[in-house]
Image (cartoon, one colour):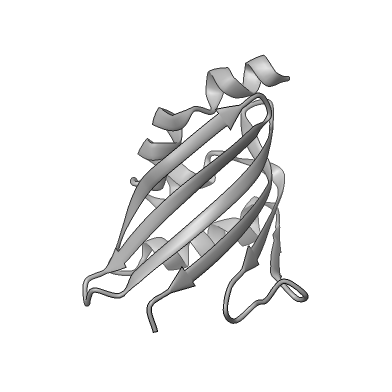
Length: 120
């Protein structure tokens, strides 16, 4: 499983998808993926949890529909795990930073925990 993950999920693939569009990023998720989001509004004791590509896709379409740039800052892929940092900026200068830890299966994201913070 580690070889398959590293051959289809790597830093270049993630960068193209994340800095591209919602459908490109969604293509990196398995059908049964789960995404947990922790931030100021959804704190660790009650994170926002999205189940499956449908729910994750709705969120990504909302985010990528905004006037917001996305940049992959750091990424480490090791076997069936990956961790990465993403920075975003709205056109008005508000910045967002997100840190993610993911579990991969056959090169697709099956579990992700994202911790994000933004300028207020």
